[in-house]
Length: 346
Image: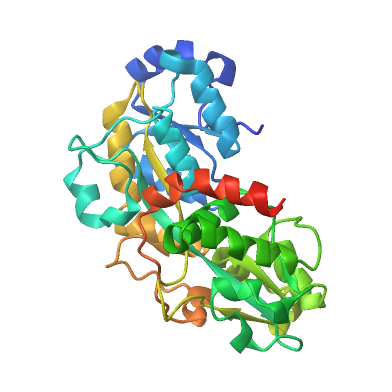
């Protein structure tokens, strides 16, 4: 686990030192599963604007959830930030967040990109979006064959489909969304069809899938858009070669739209610096922070009025996004797990 602190506080002693640190300076303790170097500029900007110093721990989603469970009431965490709707939902149902009522957040972030709200406020908020798209080998696959996620189960694609593990959060969320749209039974039939079309056993990350499509090992694959955008913005000759050999499809443009996933955050259940935590969430919805997300990691803003002018995202063109509530996508991971197990999507 990688731990990064903006101060000299040691991880082991953070819980004990928080009251002392808070008395000396304004602080925010952030548990983040985002591992992008460009986010440092985001945190620096927040500190410059507010005077609030960020102490940051970075780790994987599940590692951070386990840390919060273990720490319980003694946790120093003020904000938990993770990179998938399924993980946000999991943290929510385990009671790791507290509700936040904020006119700023409610006015800037659409309702389908916020967590449960029982009147006391939402438990988490999305701050950046990525879409899950289909890439195909231009030389070997006709784009007309893969206009929808359902098409990945077509018999014409036998031996051509590559994906990462079905148990990965990105796939859990997509499969969960498919079960919401199609019903669990039809979603399972679809999943069995996709598994039957595998070119190889699922392995690697999204960049690996794109490169395998470029080499012809796979005919089609699923990827989050920011992985493709990275390759598009790269100056490396090998990356330019990959981009030249693959095409991209916005799936389901004539039905419910392309599946969207998010990075999101909420105030931790026992946050010792709640006011700073809420201020940080409101900052993440600001124009400047939304532009940082877009230009730094090739993600779309969640605030509709923000135009980040990212050249790679602009080159992908406009698309119809699925507006299915991401809270329901999170809940649907229970169905998704059953579908993965029964279909053999390992």
